[in-house]
Image 1 (cartoon, rainbow, N blue to C red):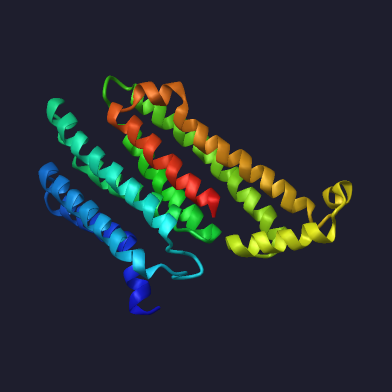
Image 2 (image 1 turned 45 degrees about the vertical axis):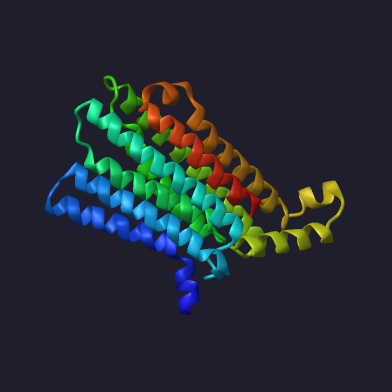
Amino acid sequence: MNSDQILALMPIIVLSLCAVVLMLQASVRRNAKVAWNISALGLIAAIWGAGYSLDLTSQVTPLIIIDRWGLMFTTLILIASMVTLLLSRESFSKQQKSKDEYYLLLILAVLGAVVLIHSSHVATLLLGMELMGIALYAMIAFPEKGNLSLEAAIKYLVLSACASAMLLFGFALLYAATGDLSYVGMASKAAIAYADNPASLGFVLNCRLFPSICGRLMFIRALLLRLLVFWQRCLRVRCLSLLREYLSVVIWPSTIIWWWR
């Protein structure tokens, strides 16, 4: 990996360093104001890094691709996260709460979304999706009134676990059919397999293609379950109001650009 490829990863590197600094800061001295300032600086630096990476687009590793589409959606998510950070400070000050761990979870969720956007392999897909999801479990559980937000977080955790299980099973079937876990490899080998068996009944019953078809169906089902869980009534009503808008801005763009790949 050369210097240009490392610089192309600036948004991911900056967000990772920001998360590490926040964890170190929390272990030394818990201070919500300091945590907010670190998070704000990290997001601003990540936005600058996304703009700097526009001229350094490339397939950095077999796992990550940096392109203009991905950087555009990355910038959108970073800006939305910065707005959420500003609103959350005002919201917590009105509620007279000091939630410095909330900012760490926010940075980790953004990092997961950015990794998901730039993924070109099943490994980075699962890494980004789970990093974003696990951070959001805890963010949703932040109480606004009573314990209803905790109930919403538990429901989201259970449904997301089911979706992850189906997603892994679907990818296992796709790997059995194609022998590859990269997006390009799976697409090209699946196209060759379908071309060899053009008849509808023939390729459905063919033992080589049957795992591929089942894998795609399991994958689509898991993806829909993961997306629709964010629009449940309990989630929209029972989590922090500013988090509801953040979920709609972060989840859909990261999933759309990943699906487009």
